Image (tube, rainbow, N blue to C red; front, side):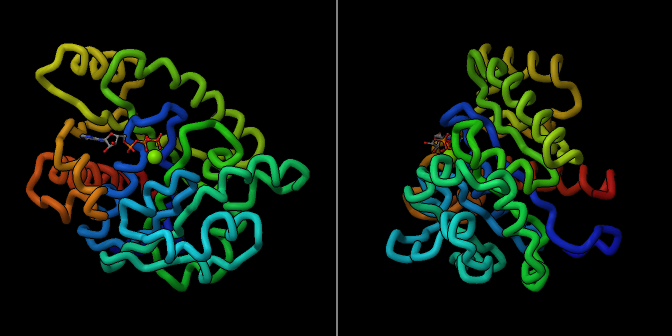
Length: 269
Ligand SMILES: Nc1ncnc2c1ncn2[C@@H]1O[C@H](COP(=O)(O)OP(=O)(O)OP(=O)(O)O)[C@@H](O)[C@H]1O
Ligand SMILES: [Mg+2]
């Protein structure tokens, strides 16, 4: 979806929350697929040594010859690490467990926080005409997540609808502030999305109320329901949008994509 008012180059969004298992990877994969359905070209960058986004999008281990590790640490060009997926207009830079040593290996590198930023701003990225780049972050506020935040225009935070959900957010926001001070003054909060939500469950309702009271407008109106089809889809190496197109999970991720696109149109970013 080309928007003549937008500056050239893709909108780069980190999907981040240092809490594990809150729906980062699920949101990355399915939001990407939903943005593609809306006519966008999307690149997913798997920045998690667990490689779950790569697996969920059907990239076999044997095909992960070049990965985000090579992009960040070996100076391999973006064009040599991008793989097509089975979904047209959805590409990925895959990850493997190699990436887990990045923190240590980069300790003496002066540009260690800017490696993804630099890699994504090579001139050749424009040739792909991506509209969005979604970065799936690991469950940590480590150097990889800092690289993602420095490389991004905004961060999107999945918040699982369960007790203590909001507890980790102050730490996350502190990191955002640090990143703004040290390398990316324009980093925005794209939004907080409630995941695995169960509207009939009192606790889910309470978390939603707390999130909306405390965080206000940055909480997306769209909530992602807990839906078994969403959790089954990765084992078929498909986004839920392809696996069960009319499931509640697929519909919610389509709504999220529309809301995100509308928000971006509104701010002209
Ligand atoms: N809406 C949903 N309905 C049902 N299950 C879900 C939903 N969203 C995520 N899950 C399941 O919850 C688990 C955690 O999700 P996911 O892997 O996306 O979290 P994550 O934040 O990426 O985890 P990690 O921190 O380990 O990277 C997975 O088994 C996933 O299938
Ligand atoms: Mg994950």
